[in-house]
Image (cartoon, rainbow, N blue to C red):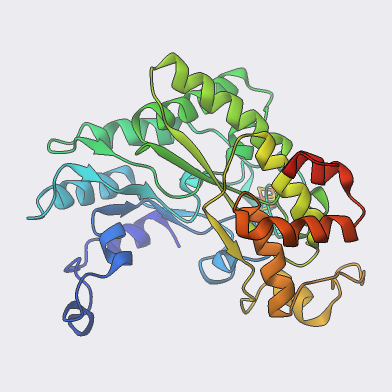
Amino acid sequence: MTTNELDSYYTLPFTRLPHPRYQKKGPIPAYEMIRHSVNTHRGCFGGCTFCTISAHQGKFIASRSEESVLAEVKEVTQMADFKGYISDIGGPSANMYKMEGKHLVMCQACRRPSCIFPDICTNLDTDHRGMTSLYRKVAAVPGVKKAFVSSGIRYDIIFHKTRDEKINKGNEEYLENVIVNHVSGRLKVAPEHTADKVLEIMRKPSFDIFFKLKRFFDRVNAANGLRQQLIPYFISSHPGSTNAEMAELAAETKGLDFKLEQVQDFTPTPMTLATVIYYSGYHPYTLEKISTAREANKKLTQRKFFFWYKPENRNELIGELRKMNRPDLEKKLFGKK
Ligand code: SF4
């Protein structure tokens, strides 16, 4: 879809209201979240194996023009219930706005399911400076007190070092600007797991990059006198994740002083590679057998590792760690050998 085509949809006379059928049923949490948000683009080139976005919006990003985005922001400021806060300027991944290959002819022949896994394609233009400029323009629209970026941010693209120092600097400035001016107290990101084995099946980058993000986030907050939180999202029972990987995830996140809240259990979703593995038990690309928790009790145990700190989970998890003969993790999580 071209920018002109996408812009033309946003000139249609949308009411910005839920369907009347739902309006009678009282507040709709999802609507409350998006009523003052503005979408900047469609599509995602991340190619995460559990996600359908690239299947239904496409791998190639279709972006609105700045004029179209700013016109909608102005419209939102005129809404009767608008109090000055744009809840999100984003898309499936916030920081893919206007990103595409440097040489589109290469992209047309490309068969990679992800432009950023297992490494960031050298043909991908990862310059974030245009987004920083857009956010500044949005924040300057009369009536806007604050414009938040609540969509997920792919921090691996930001920290990827290109040969152009100006782009590298601009990318870190983008993240700094987001942390200082566009976060509502909590920056939510989605490392999804900590174990390389599972991350590889998910087509997600190594957890090492999360450590880098954490250091950057803490430094920017300290330098600006802010006390914001970094909130990581994780998935349990994803194909390839066993109790051992979940125990390691618990120990790793405990080491970073996190008590996790934003977690979910893997849900098989049509048209995804992860779901093929979930049902077949095999990775279709390699034919490697992949173990997956399918039974409710096994899924629940994996989930409990997120909440290792809850007293009611302690005995069961210690039992599981002993079955796995992992005194090292027992010590890290519960302080005993
Ligand atoms: S060539 Fe690179 S940037 Fe273009 S689609 Fe393929 S992986 Fe993505």
